[in-house]
Image 1 (tube, rainbow over the protein chains, first blue to last red):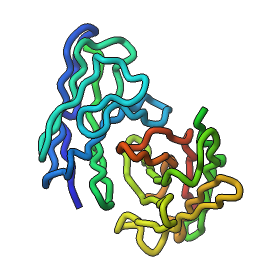
Image 2 (image 1 turned 45 degrees about the vertical axis):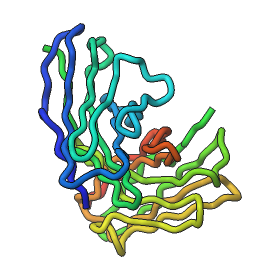
Image 3 (image 1 turned 90 degrees about the horizontal axis):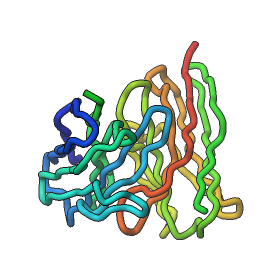
Length: 109
Length: 118
């Protein structure tokens, strides 16, 4: 089973700042099958990025994903008030289990 | 529009079973697999398993093997997740989510809170 480790656990930033979130896998993620989700309190997760760097439908271009192999990054170029939330990475390789990272909380400084 | 609507909250005693439903609409149900994900209070997301749209096969998280069963009813476009021998640490919000060919889960149900308490 691939274990995903996200860092930092919490990121304290101000609106307008740049956020950089990391996701490291215990073994290589095949074909960059990595996704990022945003979750706000009391809501279901929302798909932001798939295939490591492709934005899902309707996702603003301030969200971008990069990386390959075992190291992946989600970048939010300029934080908007609605971006303060918890972010999870997930690997969905050719066969299950499809594991999630433990999450990074982006909070208002 | 694509929607996944789940059944309501449940309260169960330890040792009991729960069956959560997830009714899909707005797309061809048989063209996408369905995954189930749970989230314990204040915790992260845990993938539980999925049922394939291609052949109806299932894959379950190893820790749930033997206690969980996922099924679909294509006549009603509904997916089901049954969890047996419930324990207090099964208390969580349970989500269904649509698998996509492009990768990831693009639509999610609203979540079903299952509380296990004596």
